Length: 166
Ligand SMILES: Nc1ncnc2c1ncn2[C@@H]1O[C@H](COP(=O)(O)OP(=O)(O)O)[C@@H](O)[C@H]1O
Ligand SMILES: [Mg+2]
Image 1 (tube, rainbow, N blue to C red):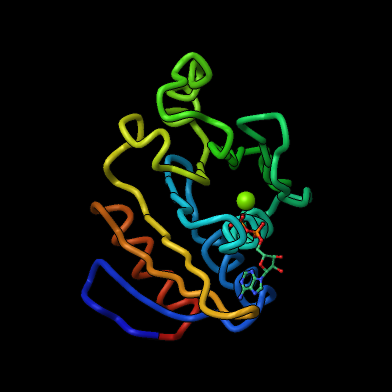
Image 2: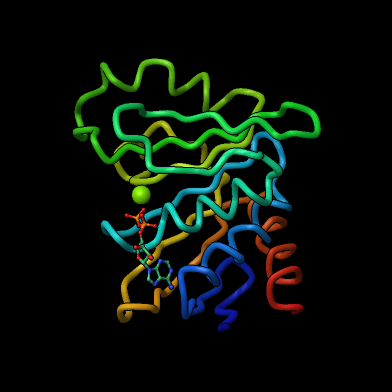
């Protein structure tokens, strides 16, 4: 892992299992109002990471790529608090009629993770953790994580400790 500065880390995951495990670490630390953006091409591993985050959050449900829905809900078993999974893959950049209701999710009382966040960029709160995933080889993916505000920097700090012990 490379710590580029207080706001950024870079590392390479060597397997889908490792990506999911890292997601678990992050999901355990997530709090309501937190936002994690998952950016990267198809097959970059966004949903694999999201699946771990859902597990770490404590939902008994398996996170999947929603085929027709824009938003899936994963309530935590302990207290019912919801982790929202928004997948904007099918959104055109200008198809704002489909984004009705997303503000409520983004400003609501749950935690949120978003795939293809670029497609709703203007709607996204500033303070967010931005994970940019990219293909390295068949089994390896690079993760570049940037914090963009006070809470996300705190989250990144805690994640570094939990996942890498630093
Ligand atoms: N290190 C890795 N991390 C995540 N996925 C990986 C990795 N290596 C291989 N893969 C594979 O890449 C694919 C990622 O799929 P998915 O998580 O649905 O991507 P996305 O949501 O970004 O389109 C899966 O088939 C997974 O098995
Ligand atoms: Mg996906």
